[in-house]
Image 1 (spheres, rainbow, N blue to C red):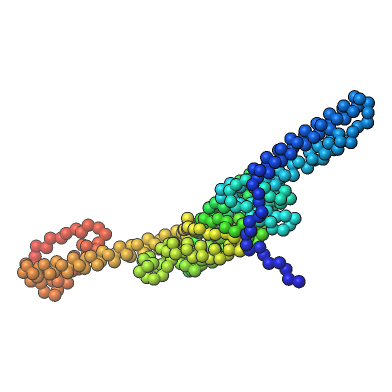
Image 2 (image 1 turned 135 degrees about the horizontal axis):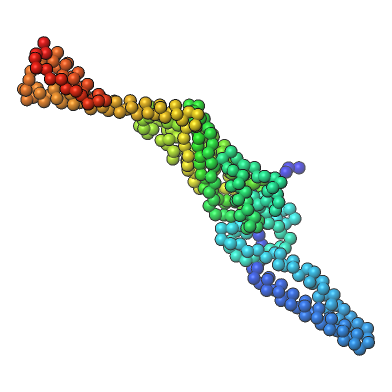
Length: 351
């Protein structure tokens, strides 16, 4: 015999207008009080007259007592749903339906709300919540306290999950610290409740896994510090939007089974790990110095060429190859040096 497949589709339960049921329940309670009062009055009158209690009075008295024993049951089936809230109901262990539209409803009084993300009072101290490497127990526990205050209802609002900082090796094996923020919401309450144990913990763990799987495919930065798009090599620093989009795609594929929608992912922290930060800073400084020297040399060569052309066009002085070499050497020393040049006046011939 095949096992039943996991719940994948939501269904709307048969719910009536709660206001009418509430008014009817109050009216019936008032009527039962009146019936009980008539029964007591009839028995008191019979006792005063010294006759046996009439059957009608006994029936009225018993009917009033029996109704008061079950009068609370219709009120248990009253449910209030606020905007962007949902309530998943089960009836004797079977999925009954999900209330998602705002309103005041009446359902079967034996229906029970289900939300695995809400822990029973006192359970948090005995069984601490399972947390991922990037989410602290205090953060998840504060979220669960808010959920407990709302009862068994599931929030359909956009929720921000702060993944925190994780130490991961990039494509080149360099340890780096990365943190992301995931904006998500519940779109299928049946999947969120029945397909995973706790959809919040499930999302947190899958976000950690998606982040690790994606970061290890990219280097922190390109080797020579150039522009990623010019070289065609994406990196974590230069292509953060591309990396975030890839994390979103992978994470969405993992949480579809839980009925969650990933609305956005953003990288909030990106840095080298402390053990290699100093060495990488020196590497970046050296790369910046080399780039600056290249620019200075290119500019100096252009200025030397311009000076020689101006002297030749103006017929100021005729320079042979040896004098040109000496002039080029002097100009490059002046233009490329780190210190101000100290001019030396030559009053004689250079030969």
